[in-house]
Length: 231
Image 1: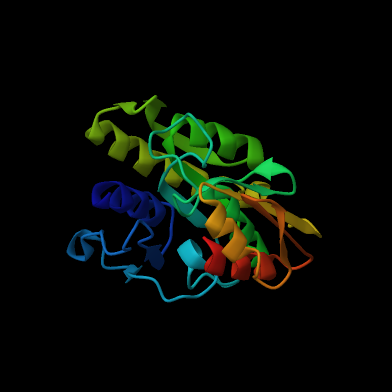
Image 2 (image 1 turned 45 degrees about the vertical axis):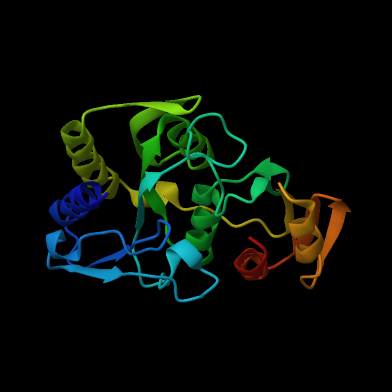
């Protein structure tokens, strides 16, 4: 993880960046070896509790966002690590479409007017990202098959990520800018019906069936508040 993040940072610096923020966003969010990062990096570790979750501290002053080490969504067969935010749900849908952490976080970036220009991860996630954001640059480092993965060499992954981030930032990044929908309909189906019942008491949420909740809002921040409390 650290090596791939360092590669993304190096590609950014080569493209002209002079300040980088890294959000450690896996599990405990205390994984990345800080001493190995370039000195231009500010590292955010742990979880503050802000509804921006994996995009914590992002605001409109950022020029671009880069996503490294992403996995496919809950309900996908493209990765044995496939899940969305937590492992307690079968799937999450936003406006009728299955949502990955990439989609959730890209909408956060769009809320701040920040384009997501690059993503690396499994092949399924890369394909979804390319369809969702046509101008994005992707690097697939592995392919999931059942409970197994087939990965490229770690050294090759690092090289491709470094080059990919550089290329993504040297293009016209405006092509990756996403417009937020004006309305949001969210559906979360849980593995445990008890979790669905409890989540249905979040303001504005309701049970669609014993295992599924529904939530609607015109504000994406309201959707993020939902996610903060019901996953």
